Amino acid sequence: MIASSTVKLDLDQHNQVNVAIPTLWVSDLLVARQHLSSFFQLEQYKGKVDHINPGNHYILAERGTPEALVKGLAWKIQLAGGECLVYGINNSLENLVGEITAAKEMVIQIIEFARPYEEWSTRNDETKLTIKEAAEIAMSAISLLPEPKKSIELATLRERCNQTSYDWNRLMGKLEEEFKCELHKRLAAGELLTINDTGNFAKQLLDGDLTKKWTETSMGKELSEKYQKKLAWNTLNKRWYSYEHDSDGLWSVVSDEFVGKMVLNDAIARRGTTFSHAFLAGTIKIIKYELSIDKWNEATGLMPLQDGVLDPATMRLLPHSPDYRFLWQLPYKWLDRSIGCEPVINWLNETMQHNQELVQVLRAYLKAVVIGRADLHRFLEGIGPGGSGKSTYQRLAAALVGKSNTLVTSLKHLETNRFEQQFSF
Image (cartoon, rainbow, N blue to C red):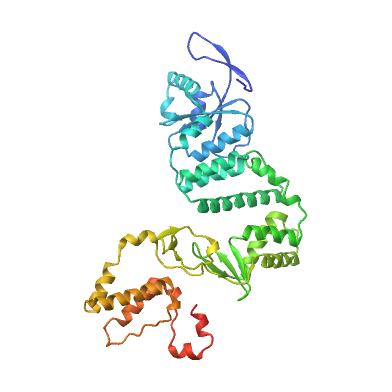
């Protein structure tokens, strides 16, 4: 056993043996010092870890200790060359070591029954996680683990929180970018980086962006690759579009200032503040060229919903994707379909006096509105006295597609205003 020093541990009244002192990581350093300081070098695992002693390390994981905290500490210990073991308890340390004899028994239990970190981690991999818990562990993995361990850990976390590959990879991309930007800000500020801040991932970055000689073209090329799935320049209407700026799964118009701020922040993270407005403008122009789209071709035959994209042909819900290029979305979730539509059916039957042919015609027209069958070249004219259901049917159709997807116009405007038809698509 490797350790930094040795002392005599009086584990019973008759026998004394010389052993190397391991390090014990605890949540409550005050309680541990009162009862365990004779047996371990004590460290507190909550808060910043500035130094890792060599030798064996035991993490005392009390009930409720976040897995992200234990894993992050274990990875730091391993990066520093230490041996890591984990001992889990279902009570607080204070309740277990109130007496000297209890403290000695606790020491024996820790030494004999603590499991190597890899074994503890493998058993934990069988339990499910929330997306928040998985993201907290992933952030530590991104900052501390080398490849291929990082990719293996992230893949395991995705399965444990039951996320789709697309959603998980999108989240991991955001976390990696967040870590990368934070690292560059600290480097630019001249802050000292320790093992607490970085891992192999961070070390790879140290040789990268801040020492690179950036030009408008190289900066524009790199940021274009980063923005490829979330930013586009529409050459027809000369506008920027951002993916999921307003709603999941949707592209929406954003201002020049919004794009400028994005590029400014990323340029500062990579180069510091040593560049001019002309450099920023030139970088944005390169990005505009790289991300320009001549024809905004939305996916056809699909229905964008709040929780995914429905394929009416198979009735399968697909995950959102920027490649669909959707600018609109129906204002409800596929998950809510079990609510049913009995009130609407009952109202249609009542309004049409149970004439099933008319009810089916009205339902078919509503379906055509929802799935966007403009190719049918039909319009519906409602005739009847007040209170017969014309306005209610109109509001029902608008509710099915969402108010933002409707247009109020007239036949005269459609015939005489050359821009009116453009506004309706």
